[in-house]
Image (cartoon, rainbow, N blue to C red; front, side):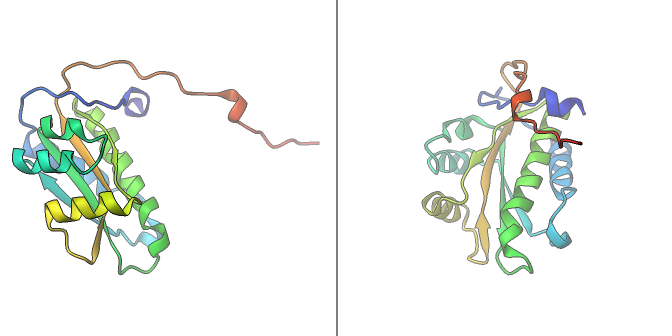
Length: 166
């Protein structure tokens, strides 16, 4: 469980390619995520082209780091599924799995939120020519980190409420 406590948001990457085997491992981790009714609504766009990465960087005010990543994974979800209201939860699970596996593999990444903001989703759709039956969810720039920092301890006991037994 160390990746949970080691994962941090990494926005600066070395100029070094991420191996195909590692990218495939990240996608396997994503697809191992739980989903409502086992609907697995996900599709993944893998981007390595520097021109496309730069265009994706312009899709969010927080996306500047995308242009320097070795690769970006853009999860998207199918609209025509049995439980569409759960798609963003399913994609959140898949995205978190990618971020944890990134840490396990010695890589760095950050979650750039796209959904549910229609303007950002449309920008990503145009850059990647995502078909209408899919909705872009996030952009995950990935690379070998320039530096790492320890994760801060976020545990806050005041936010935990135990059931009282009388």
